[in-house]
Length: 323
Image (cartoon, rainbow, N blue to C red; front, side):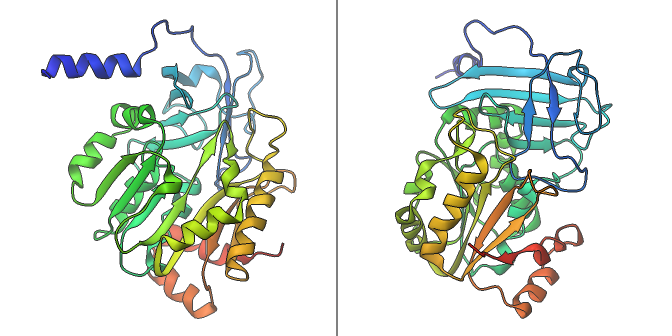
């Protein structure tokens, strides 16, 4: 296939036949600039909505640079102006569902995102030697940060929707990342729950959402039994379990309820070797991650020493799952 034909094919894949008109709306992210959320959200409201710090970024500071639907997702890529008075100023955001939950973020001049991707990036120091799997790869936000922080780390990512990976390459620098780390980053298109590598994963990051909700399989203990079997000895799993901050397309899939069901399913498999990190700063706006494995005080101290200063604070937030 010629270079021109490849470019035409990529353009056809990324561009809808009849692009809709421009979006109007605002960014509605965390209520505190200092607290990241597992699944920050973009709500589309009338342009005339009065701006407050909690309301986020007016439409004047947001540009939609891609928008189309695939078999699996409603894909939108947003560019936030560097002039915006918001923590996400200068960022590029990937949305994959109608409610506007953010699935990837990148900044031009910094690696840390002040979101749950930074928490994911703390995992490697407490893993045995070996590769890390990212189930729900998105546009590569987690992979980028981890590859920069850990020079010897190998990452295998799984993403169900090939268009998400295509968007990552086109708008989030994923193609450059793959060329920069050809022997350390490997991306597969397919069901992440079927992911496996020879000798097992040292660690697995689970970020599997569909239509604004954790996929139903994660509320089944059998799924966690299978994922545990795909780990090598001493391996761990870190999971974005969402919470009430996550808005699903199906109103029956309440974010907090789904989070609790997921944690219960994990607890049946991992028992007291299950920890939860809550990032919400309001009772009605929780958002959490889960971690498997032992986590004694000496382990935490060694963990913090292995992390850059900007990530050390997350270690002390993990607490045993209470049920």
